[in-house]
Image 1 (cartoon, helix red, strand yellow):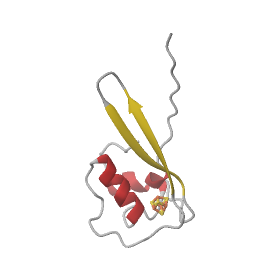
Image 2 (cartoon, helix red, strand yellow; image 1 turned 180 degrees about the vertical axis):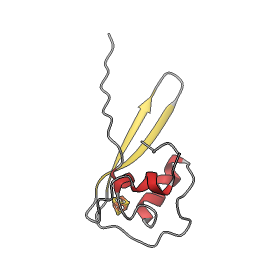
Image 3 (cartoon, helix red, strand yellow; image 1 turned 30 degrees about the vertical axis):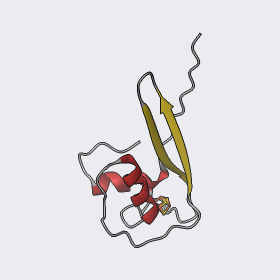
Image 4 (cartoon, helix red, strand yellow; image 1 turned 90 degrees about the vertical axis):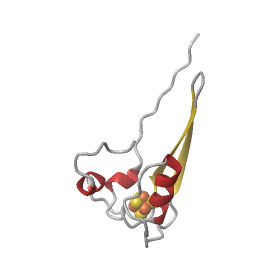
Amino acid sequence: MEFSAKVEEMCICVDCHWVDRCKTYHAVETQHGVDHLNATPDIQPKEPKIHINLNISNSDAEVEWDVRSCKSFLKDQGRWMKLCPGKEVPT
Ligand code: SF4
């Protein structure tokens, strides 16, 4: 028997105007071990809620951090992609 439930939800930060200035997104980048958009973010967002997902496979464990809500969110569709043209959008 196999149980499988996969929810694909992206971090809302990729469509947020503040993504390259945000201290919380900077922390998410650190957790994912990816390059930072900005080494010195200067905005502390209001009440970001981070969803932490633990994926365990046969020999591996992976932790994903995604911001799912935030009172500072300012919609700027595709903001991350505009900052990093040609790169794969983080999920
Ligand atoms: S949604 Fe919130 S946590 Fe994410 S980049 Fe925007 S301000 Fe930062």
